[in-house]
Amino acid sequence: MAKVQLTNVTVLDNSSPFSQQFRFELVFECIEELKEDLEWKMIYVGSAESEEYDQVLDTIYVGPIPEGKHMFVFEADPPDVNKIPEKDVLGVTVVLLTCSYRGNEFVRVGFFVNNEYADPELKENPPEKPQFDKVVRNILASEPRVTRFKINWDDSEQRENGLAEEEESMDAGGVGTSSSLPPPSSCFFNEGNQSSASNSNQAMEVQ
Image (cartoon, rainbow, N blue to C red):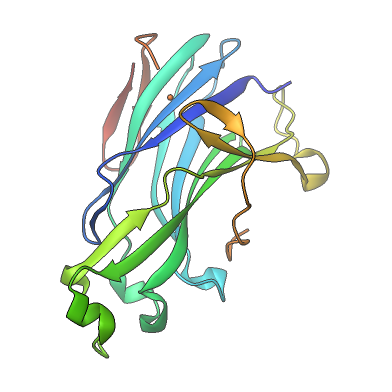
């Protein structure tokens, strides 16, 4: 049985300019104390054609985690535009949130992301060279796709068979069913306890 259950993900500041940070509020429940950190990643899929263009926007470590419910806001800078093929800037792509324990990923949440010009004229006749300062990002927040993986929580063994345990959608009211995301190239809460979190750029508080 999974020792951590991700119960809600809320997209904040949606829609927003392409150059604005991604912000997600995540709520999870830990059924027993975890001695080691949870590793959270935010990944932007730059192109559906190759994982070469996937960008890890940020990685944070949260822990140790006491039993109970926890909430934090995961923020990350937008992707490096120089690493996105120009033909893939506009249109639909995917942003992923993943969580791992002892190096083993046990949950992945995917959101569709639509990038387009707000100006009707630019939308109708997009310039050959993308004008990123005029692109608006809209995340399809109502239908996240959740994939859970079976892992061994007591040691660092690999995921069992490397297969997904289940796929489902998640919304503010809980877990339901939804149409699935196309496979990306690389592939919620009350006041509660406090834990420490850190990455190379910031310290983060879990409430």
